[in-house]
Length: 391
Image 1 (spheres, rainbow, N blue to C red):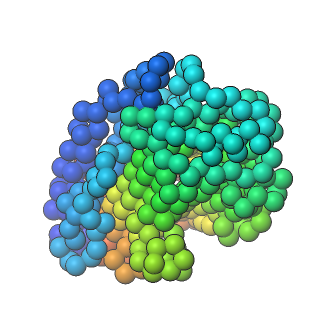
Image 2 (spheres, helix red, strand yellow):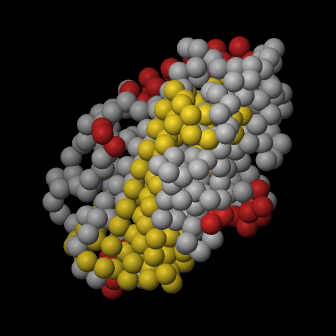
């Protein structure tokens, strides 16, 4: 490991961030008895686990810069709170009620007719084509689309987006499978929603993508396999935000502030690019408890790449599984003011590669923190290229 001197204000930044993390966790713990599903009838409250809250970055919590003029994403919590993650990472359809569909035509009609509180259940079978959700639920009455893994949305290698969440809030999609599309699930301007327990495979580009200022969402317990069949470079597993080259396409040439999203407990393998890619312009999210794999990774050299600010990356487990990577987790500065103030701790990383467990780009200036509690094996250069932090 290469030990590098810490910037003069790095230790004080660590103390401020630690306080913010503890505060954020307490805030989430106070909401553990919130209603997961909303709606009426048999749609009862679910018991919740205490998960790390988004926005571990103090400047993101306060809606200010970091004291050096670098941008933050503004005040946290605008428009309501994010949904909470259920215990064990399992999100299931509410019991009782709703509409059961059996084919693509019925599914299309049910989605078009949806309103707050609607529950759509997909029976086992193939649903050929691509599908969109364009109606929002509410905090107390979200819209549900759910099914078992035997209910399969099949794009037959022709669909652009297998499931498109388009400018909606308070939507829950859970349990079913998606395969053979250019992209799996795409969420544009989506808020307070949950993408859970899906099986996404045989995808041309990325499997799950939150973009266009999608905020306060949870991507939890999904299984992702076999991406990048159309373009290896774009074969990410889970992708948050947009690259700077696409800001003019999606966010009027401004940063894609897909902020305060949580990527929790997913099982990702067979991606040609990163398992999880966090883009510049995003802030205050959580990547926690994911199972990562290097198998099939030919267009990237790490499981996780963080280019945003104030992300908490913790308790993830990575192995190469016969694949090849350079570093386990990386941060990068690809745009001035980004790739800063992220906390990477408590991860279990079997790298079996030439680099580091955690590589920090521009480590002296970006105020990123790498915990000494990261457990790293098989990394040719050791834990990290910056001095690790205890506590």
